[in-house]
Image 1 (spheres, rainbow, N blue to C red):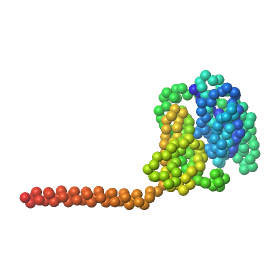
Image 2: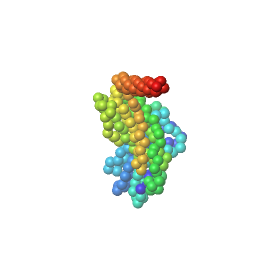
Image 3: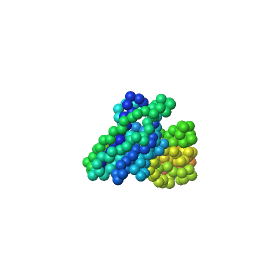
Length: 250
């Protein structure tokens, strides 16, 4: 397999949004699409492929200005020649508050990943998901933002594990593949939320995104258990001292 990295060069201006389509030549097999290392952190439409059209739409909070930087990466079979992608339907907007269209350049680089698949045994690096809200996103509802790094083979995708309101605190939840930002289903935030980063060879890193405060009942039960152990320990010590005293007197 080979890793195709598509980078964007914004030129001298700062950019904050990109959207549209990348046309992929007919007959080219795309094994997977990864956007975890992308300059775009908020996907309004996560990169998806359909009938040779790779659609995407996202924003870059605060904008980006500088050297060419990764937009997305594709995994293709090893034997496939590097495709000639058509970027003419991608629109890039300036970070000027007016939505001015700018002319950006796109570059394609190829990295063989066969050796990485053999040698990469290291999971993605630790990362910290953040809960936020914005009146311009998801109608002001709470969402989760996350981004991880993997220096060996790169991030493949993310998965989120979120239990529904009313579920038992000890119940398991199902991992679902998702992108950042992730709209939180349980807006009450009374259940645990976890995020998993998976690299291109399957190594995983799971982090806790949110933990609800324990119910006071759990603290009460814990206090009772601790109290019982203290009483048991005190009785054990008293009995041992009593036996020792009787042995000495005799």
